[in-house]
Length: 160
Image 1 (cartoon, rainbow, N blue to C red):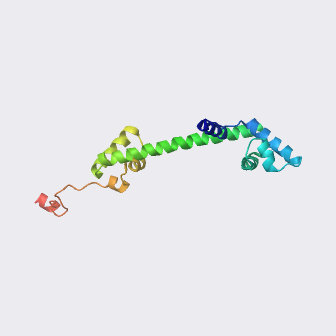
Image 2 (cartoon, rainbow, N blue to C red):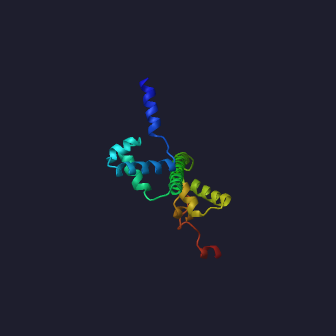
Image 3 (cartoon, one colour):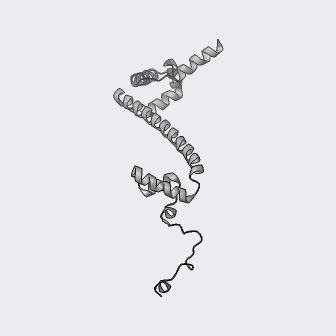
């Protein structure tokens, strides 16, 4: 029994109000306060907390119901986009962790940067950023192992 009352009270607390109801409640509380009632008692009569009244008054004062509805839709859309962004950031972190095993050397990353640029048409800067390759490392041509600049035959000895 006690759990069901808690659940009901939580549902009431998180109840989404329409723009018209918010404007109506603000007007009701303002009228009650004009007749000499305190803000706390007027808000309690309207079934909201005093802090909710002051928050709504600060946010929606001077707006029409249409403007409040537009603002509420905008805030909902913003919250939805922020949740989607958080999910995408988590997905990216997962892919980065997995790719570290597969892209363990700069040579492998260099090949993948070239592949991504060719197939997806993205810039070198973007491909390097996503795959964790520094751009100077991408541009630097690797030396052949076992060869140094002193062991190469000179131009004179080739003609002699």
